[in-house]
Amino acid sequence: MSPAEGDLADRPVAGATLRVTVDRDACCGAGNCVRTAPEVFDQDDADGLVLLRRAEPPPGSVDAVHRAVELCPSGAIRVT
Amino acid sequence: MTRAVEAELPLWPPVNLARGPFALLDESERDRYVGPVTRVRLPTGHAAWLVTRHADVRQLLRHPGFSSDLTRPGFPLLRPLPPQAPEDVKGSFIRMDGAEHARLRRMLTAEFMIKNVRRIEPLIRQTVDESLTDLAAAGPPADLVSTFALPLPSMVICHLLGVPYADHDFFQSRSRALLDQQTSPEVLRTAVQELRDYIRGLIGAKRAHPDGSEDLLSRLIAERVEPGELDVDELVGMALLLLIAGHETTANMIGLSVLLLTRHPGQFTILRDEPDRAAGVVEELLRYLSIVRTGLFRAATEDAEIGGQLIRAGEGAIVLISLANRDAAVFDDGDDFDPYRQAHQHVAFGFGVHQCIGQPLARAELRIALVELARRFPDLRVAAAPQELRTRDNSIVFGLDALPVTW
Ligand code: HEM
Ligand code: SF4
Image 1: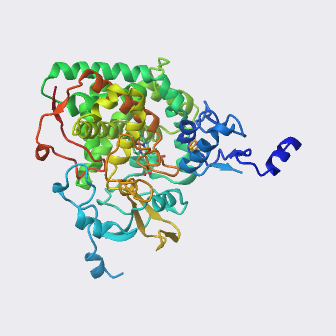
Image 2: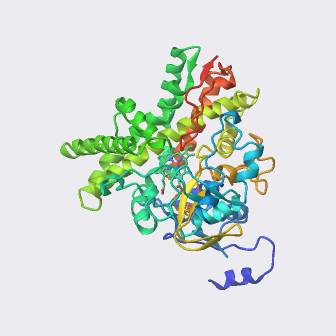
Image 3: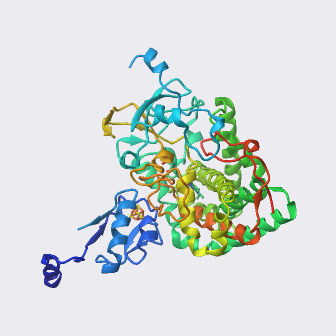
C-alpha cells in the first residue's frame, strides 16, 4: 500500500476507500458481480472467472460493490 | 427416529391441484412445511430436512459439507435411481462436487457469461421475431407454449450447441421423462440412454467431418476432446445437461410469465411502454414464479447446523428456493407480485458453486421474448378458464402444459 493510501485508510471519513479482493479459485463464474458493478468487475475471456477492473472502486460504486459481495454465490469477493 | 415415526411425517412434495399456479402452499401446507427446518417424508419412503428461509438456503447452498452427488448415502431421492452404468452419468456436473465439478463447469463458464450472451442477442432477437410470426400465423387462438415459449429457447440452445433443431420432438419427449418425478426407473434409464446415444452420434459425426464450425460442441471437440483433456462421454453428459436445462426452464418461465402478466391489466403493457423496466420485471418474475419448486437436493457429508437444526452427515436436505424467494425477512409482501420491486436478492437460479451457469442467457431470452410479445400482441389474453390450464406438478421444473391465447 502506498503512503497516500495508508493516510486515507487511517482517516475516519464517510465513504473512505474500499479495497476489493477476489478469489479466482473460489469463483464459479456466475457473473453476478459483473451484472451488479460492471465498472469494478469483469470476467476473463478465457475461463469466465472473475477479474478486477479496479481494486479501489470509486465512491459512486461502493454500494454496488457491497451488493456484489452479498450476491456472489461462492463467496469469492472480499472488501476491506 | 424410528421408521414408524417417519411414516407420520408430511409427504414432500405435496400434491395439490387446487392451489393454482401461483400459490406455493395453502394454509394447512404452510403449517406443515414452513419450519424454518422441518422433517419430511419422500415418495421413496426416506426422510429429509426441508429448508425454507432465505438466509438458511444461502448458508446451506454455500456450505462445503453438502453434496450434489445422487449416489451419496442419504441423498434425498424423489424416485428410485435406475441401475446406472458409470457412463450414464459422466459429464453431468450438476450432480458433482468439488474439483470434479469445477473442472467441467469451468470449460463452459466463459461461454455463457454476460458479454458473450450480449453478442448472441441478435440471434435471440431474430429467433423471437420468427417465432412470433409463427404465432401470428397459427391463430387466434393459438397455444403460446407450443408455438412460442418452447421453440424459442429450444432453437437458441440448439443453435449454440450445434444440435439440429429438427430433432426437437425426439429430445423434448425424452427430457420431459427425465424431469418427471413419476417416471419409472426403466423408462428413465431408456430415456437417458437414447439421449446419450443421440448426442454421441452427433459428436461422432462432427469428429469424422470437422468443418471448422463455430458451435459449442465443435469447439469443445477441437479444443478439449482432441487434445485428450475431455472424454467423449463427458462431453455427451455436458451437452445433454445444457440441452435440457437450456430449454425446459426458460420455456416454462415464458408460459407462466404470460399467464401472470395478462391477469392484471397494465402489467403486460409495462413491458411495451417502459422497456427499460423489463430487466427488473424479469427479476421479479424469476423470484415470484420460482419454477424449480420441488427444491434443490443435497446430502450432508459432515454435521452442520442450519437454521438452528443439526443436520448430520448422511442425512438429506431439500432446499426450497421457492419459499426462500417469498421470505418476509427479505421480501415485503413476498406473496404479491410487484413488477416495481427490487428483487435482485432472489435465489431462483440457486446459490453456491452450482448457481445456474445459463442465467445470463435465460435473462436475455426472457427479456427479449416478453418485450417483443407485448409489442406485437398488445391485446394478448388467455383464452381458457383458470381451471382448464394443466400445470406440471410432477415435474422438477414447474410450468404449464399449454396456454391458449387470443389477441
Ligand atoms: C429461467 C430459466 C432458468 C432457471 C430458473 C434455472 C435454474 C437453475 C437452478 C436453480 C440451478 C441450480 C441447481 C442446483 O444447485 O442443484 C441451475 C443450474 C444449471 N443451469 Fe439453469 N436455470 C435456467 C436456465 C438455464 C439455461 C438457459 C441454461 C443453459 C445454458 C441452464 C443451464 C444450467 C446448468 C448447466 C446448471 C448446472 C450448473 C452447475 O451444476 O454448476 N439453465 N439452473
Ligand atoms: S459473482 Fe462471485 S462467483 Fe460470480 S463471477 Fe463474480 S466473483 Fe465469481
